[in-house]
Image (cartoon, rainbow, N blue to C red; front, side):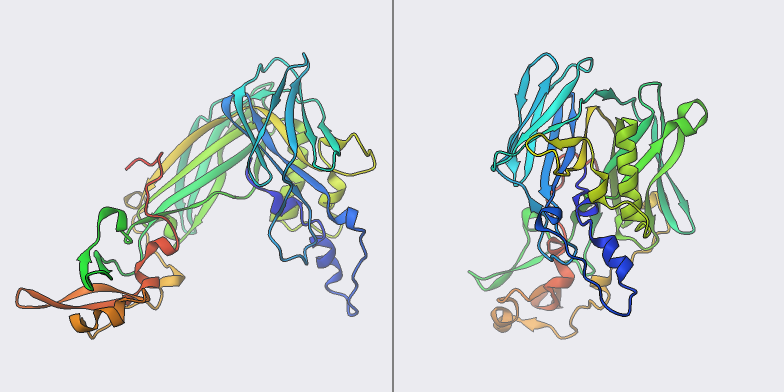
Length: 385
């Protein structure tokens, strides 16, 4: 499940927006217990894919701190026959398990926090997602749209899609040279030192939902998943999107649809606040406590699409960080290599040649030449050239 906590935990946002237009500032008072509510997110995979549960706390919109994760909990899944599987905390507030679960059985997810507060989900009935039929793209005057087609069934009518984008980009100024502080000379870069080609990603995208029952034969045709605007660096060279399709219950669909409206559409003054929405969890130690979030269970399906820049040619790119980048016109000679390149602020970019001999290098700033400042130069394991 993508990390949508930023969309459902800051439940004071709409209150701030509502009261922001008043002449006299109004600051509503909330008890600390109302502000710091438990948020449970995740999806339990049934077919030996990794299941991930995220536990966190809501924070007021005025709180500038990072997401408050709930660590040290005990998370387990229990079937209606009494079998139990324990999840491991693999990162702060992130609990995972990989295994096979019978899709004909019913389950409950149970949580025990460090303070011994106990929580349980409503009954989870796994839903098997059909395969994604097709992912393609369409270029128009606004950019490129990624489109998905799939067909629902009588048991899988409601869908939630999450996606991960990866793409290649290059810095404005590319160089194959590196300053060696030991020899105080300029060398050619080794492959692992390359800074002229990088990958970056978008792993926490928006909520995308659809009800197949709205369409004839439950067939969802070319549902827009992502819009890539003109000039985006995503299509500078090669782009990849992997879409994971999850079939969910109507209750889960309704929950995420409210989150989508509150996050994408900002909601209205009468939109339900996340703190009032709840989900499918309850505190069995304290029935009065509200718990936010929804966990579903099932077998998801996924499909990947690659787009090359040649597929959308012409595709001009504008990267604001590189707008004013340029190579210096005056070369730096060997006697000044250490002074110019030793701090790492500048990098040798273009050789200055006299006859057949390199006598110096014209410099460019590291910010304009080193793509690893904005990405990583190691190819993702799944990447296909």
